[in-house]
Length: 108
Image 1 (tube, helix red, strand yellow):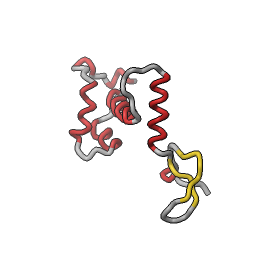
Image 2 (cartoon, helix red, strand yellow):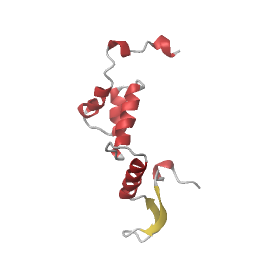
Image 3 (cartoon, helix red, strand yellow):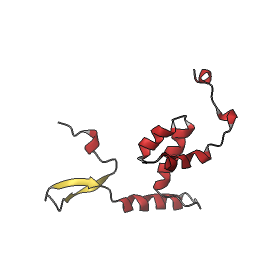
């Protein structure tokens, strides 16, 4: 029997640990600080001088969805924003003007 996807971790820990509440031994998710350290090291090794954190992936995800033509309400739902005004922040990078509109015929 396989475990449903919603119970799987995208970044599982290497080791098992004991759950202090139940006493069960199981694999948990990676500690978020571990992921932050790995990304920081990668940024340094790449010689980047800009500040880059794991949260930047969230911004990139939202921006790429909007650039690909996803509607703002879909992006809002995916990011878990309760107010669309929060999601609207991502639209400032689009700035394509009227020439940025793609005809549906162009996508055939």
